[in-house]
Image (tube, rainbow, N blue to C red):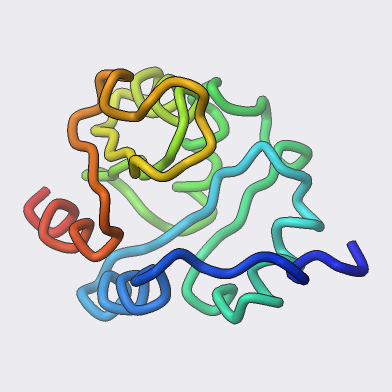
Length: 138
């Protein structure tokens, strides 16, 4: 916790893309299987916390991902409603989105052992700024 962001940086385009989505009226939430406290600390240290309407760690969720209640809880706290999109980087994110019956967009630079393009997401992107037209079209 004392060194939460010593070696962490947002991927290219993430801060600007999140800001653009918010400016377009999107509500943004983090649904992570990391602990709530550490997730909030990391987002604050990276100057990203202000871009999210809600952050829900595994210990603040009714059940962790891939259970859909994790996503439903994050959506509720963010004040969002359908249409929603799950953006992630792993099979767990894909499974959570599928269980919640919402479209899933995966980035291909995550930490999953199976390449994102092999997981069966609705879309796979290599640059985070590609997210804007995909999300706004929904």
